[in-house]
Image (spheres, rainbow over the protein chains, first blue to last red):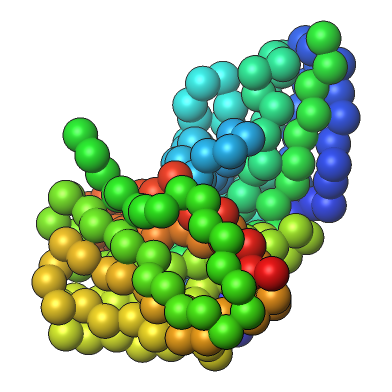
Length: 111
Length: 115
């Protein structure tokens, strides 16, 4: 079945460091791919998405490129801030109602 | 814009009690769902609905009931609370078409403790 695997956390970085959170997927068909972010005490919110191969999603300095050949959608940011501390979820949707989420990766950014 | 609204935000129940988590959305979304979030396990789908009058089970449906009498509302009922149901619950909705890329909109969460 469809699945999403993302790197285990927590990831701890110093402010202004480069961030990569790996995400790979298994899916039949051509899924849409998402990154959601959950700040402490809040619900998940969409960070970025890509709906077809080679698309790059971007938002708030974060980027991810839909790589069909490697079935990956890695999240990157060039310079993290303390305010980026959150849990990040990779997810896929192959159409319709059901979205599959990864287990989440917690990011801590130290000042 | 209200989006997805769920209540209550916090609740403590005794084992065996029942309760209903309320969820409403004002975006005219056809798809609604309930997830639970537990440490180290990410999000797990409890129940979902693809439209008014239509519901189905997700990964972890035992101990929960849902109904969808209107497009806007999708309450989750705990029939007889157990400590294993201590969790954070999220209601979510999404557009049924493909134009939005099936983006999911989440409520702010309900923290439930069963003692």
